[in-house]
Image 1 (spheres, helix red, strand yellow):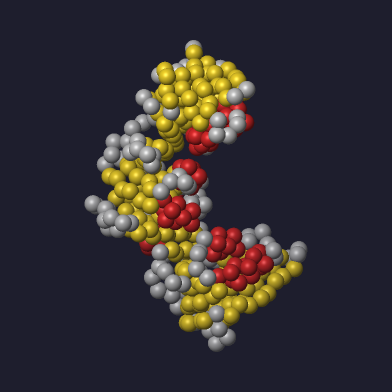
Image 2: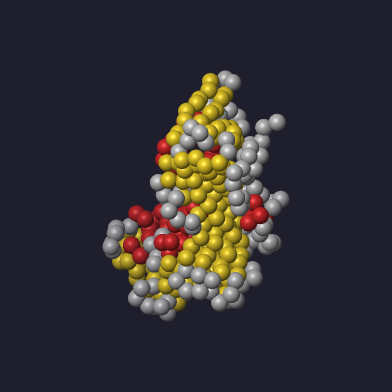
Length: 374
């Protein structure tokens, strides 16, 4: 293998692939990055056997070849090279030589034949989506899934395509978020899958600078892909195994109606919940006391060792008076992901879930279970 590539391009590729490589004791090859020339392209790959990423760049290739080298060492060296300078890369007997101005190194590699084969997605469905809307919506739900082996189906983000919408759903049994993303084109039929949380989080970092993402999947795995601007060749691919099983009927726990609603300023409500959290005790409990005649909600918390807290926030109230307690962390998480300046809190009684929705659009909702008091 012998090629030339700009340091800036190589640094980008190493940064992207380094997110997936894993420190495996049983399989040392997983700590390596796979480097291969493909005609006029350089391809970098890494995998942890569950998620894999490939990155391509146009290069001046003089000799075809491939090898694998330790990613940590390779990445550290590439990041130290002068910016906007050409990097000369060559390999022999699985070892790789890197030269850039007066920087020169030879890194020992492993046989590329031992590198895991990254599976090909046997495309059953595909859709192209604008990256900014997609990643912004994914960010609103990605931290919610529960990392549990008891209910693996809720350890990922649920993707549901229908008509001209994509619904992203996540839950940990204590709270649930649903984000609706509107598509430019109608999908041919309804389809869905559950993406592991790790892969979902990596999408936010890997595709942040891309304009569009092609999503292709079959029954076992999904492929997210962006293409180069100068050619229709892929630039970045992230392949992930899908979580098997059927996603819970989450619609059943979303309250369709509510006895009480209150319109609140989001930032003021969030800040006062944060203050109450300082005195919330071991179970993170804060109590909301909604009074219709007073058009306000009182926020209370108490810690036997630290003291107590009480405040109130004015809002437009409709419905019955109710006292309900929540885990302050779940409230803060939901409120922090809402983009509007005002929210509506909807509740029924002290033992039923509450719902938080933004004012001005209906593309996001957040449901949180209460702390039930005996």
